[in-house]
Length: 305
Image 1 (cartoon, rainbow, N blue to C red):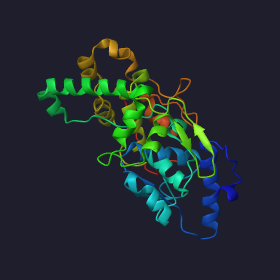
Image 2 (image 1 turned 180 degrees about the vertical axis):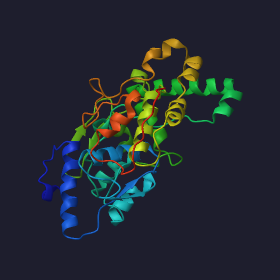
Image 3 (image 1 turned 90 degrees about the vertical axis):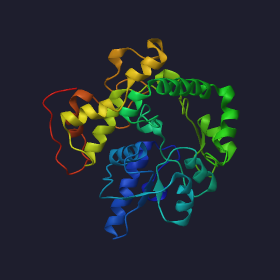
């Protein structure tokens, strides 16, 4: 692909997406099967981030490629076997593939949107309401663990734990380098170091910000998985519970209250790869700006959350 698209070794994530779009055009012209790309789950953050990257390059993820679900530990094997042509997955599986020489890392999460939310501590609302003490203890424990994981001097121990067969079952040296943001992009010696690749607690990284939940909702609408409505916006925002977080950890452990639903992607170090800015109060206008999206008509809402 790199030769056909004339990419340099230091091409950006956007340039790689645009190059893939050119390759797909050529494949279509020749009547070749479209690329098959792996994602972890149709409703996962990886799916929405992968679609965002594809669409930023001019690729319609529902028409120009075939997206299939592949369990993360199986992605490099699937790539090596030719079952898929690429994938979007959490580390360390990207570098497992690059070190095996079966793939190349062309984009990182930080390239797409650095603050994109990832893993969650999830529970049913009724269970949380009837077990407040347990919920608080879980959040306190998670907060302490996140602080511990952020410390570089703990990364050796953390790598040993994560690489265990009960968890990632991945090479400990790869896990250790991933925690430091040190990536071998391919098996030809090309490397990239991403500062702050993993943030477990720094900068309120594990704070449940409803505006981020609303961004996920906007992507569900963008790709025809949901309709835009006041009820949908309320439900999406309510899935993230900063009130429970603040109750467990105290006000000093959380950002200012008026920062819970904020404009996303408008600050240095937290830009979307295509330059878009997400205003939760203007979801319909935000979605209308995208040239690549589902053909499903986006509705409008009369009131804001």
